[in-house]
Image (cartoon, rainbow, N blue to C red):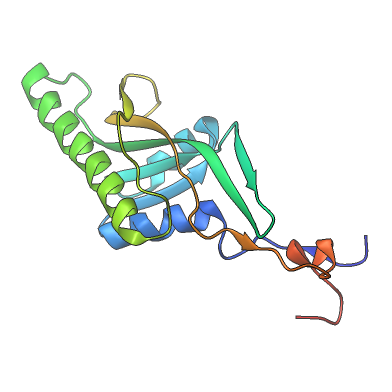
Length: 166
């Protein structure tokens, strides 16, 4: 193919990163579990891990193309190796609060359709090489804007830069 692939600045992943950034004082990782596990030794906690999506929906109308990935986000913080249940519960509640803050911040951002209803979560501890506790939420984030479609525009122009073009 003549041209190079681009990752649009408006990708769902970049929008999630923007939401996490507005929450402040969190490290953000977008990766698979295996690679994120290695990175956890070298980052500042607490952190948000945006696990690479495994599925989703492409919503296509006559004027718009939007991505609705099924997301898995882990909100984690450091815990002691031989943690006491009460102390670990404090870490867990902090992480759950971060997850709730993320949902409300995403809703307020205008980048996604509001998340409503039940948001499934599970507790994470003793599953990674570092001593962390966390909450993992699973939800579908639905882009509000997506890509505006314009009849007559070459399809590849929506997704790729062409040599010599911006």
